[in-house]
Length: 242
Ligand SMILES: Nc1ncnc2c1ncn2[C@@H]1O[C@H](COP(=O)(O)OP(=O)(O)OP(=O)(O)O)[C@@H](O)[C@H]1O
Ligand SMILES: Nc1ccn([C@H]2C[C@H](O)[C@@H](COP(=O)(O)O)O2)c(=O)n1
Picture 1 (cartoon, rainbow, N blue to C red):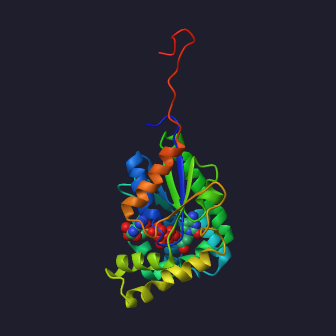
Picture 2 (cartoon, helix red, strand yellow; picture 1 turned 90 degrees about the vertical axis):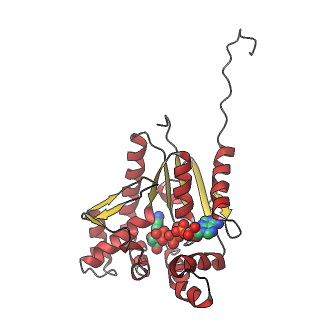
Picture 3 (cartoon, rainbow, N blue to C red; picture 1 turned 180 degrees about the vertical axis):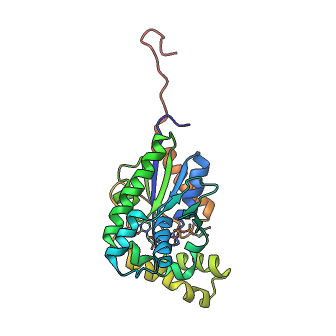
C-alpha cells in the first residue's frame, strides 16, 4: 500500500481515450480508478427510471443529492449500481449517451458531483490507495492539486473513427455519421460548462490521434516517471559519501 497515495487526474473530450488509458495506467501503477462520467450517466439512468424530465433542472439537482449510487474503483472490475441495480451496460446505451448532457450541463448537479467526487478521492487516500480520476473537469475543478494532471486529445476524425469501431465494428462513412451525435454534438454541449479541449496551465497535453492505445498509456506513464524525483541516497557527514 503506498505511504503517500498519489492522485492522477486525466481529462479529455469523447473518444480521446481517457477511460481506457486511465484504467490501464491505474492497473500498471497499482492504483484505484474513478470514472466520473459514469456518475453523470448513472444519474441520467436514475432520472429516466423515475420518469423525471431531464430538463427540469431543480428536480434533477435534488435527485443528484439523494440517488442511491454505489461505484467501485477497482480498475480490473469497475462496477456501478444504482439502487442495487447493476447499470454498467445500461449507462453506455446510445439513447442514454445522447441525453446525458442535459444532466452534465446542470450547474447544481455539477456542484453536487464535485463534492461527491472529492469525497471519493479523499476516501481512497484515507484507505491508503492512490487513484486515477478521469472526466472533463478533474484537472481544473475536482482535483486541480492532483500530483499529475493530463489532458488527452485527439482529432475529431480519430475520435469519431474510434467510437464508430467500438459501436459498429467499422469506421465506414455510415458508422461515422451514426456516431456524430455521441461525439461532436455531446462535446459541444458539455464544453459550455467545462474546458476540456485545451490543457489548463500546468496540465500535460497528450495528442493521441496518431498513437496506438499502448503508446498513449506509455506517454502518460513516461510523463509520470519523468516528473517523479528519484530518491537521492542519504549520507551522514562522516560516511565519506559512500
Ligand atoms: N491511441 C489511442 N489512445 C487511446 N484509445 C485508443 C487509441 N486508439 C484507439 N483507441 C480506442 O479508442 C477507444 C476510446 O474509448 P474511451 O472510452 O477510452 O474514450 P473516452 O475518451 O473515455 O470517451 P468517452 O468520454 O466518450 O467515454 C477505446 O476503444 C480505445 O481502445
Ligand atoms: N467530470 C465529468 C465527467 C463527465 N462529464 C459529462 C460529459 C459526458 O456528456 C457525460 C458522460 O461522460 P463520459 O462517460 O462520456 O466520459 O458526463 C462531465 O461533464 N464531467
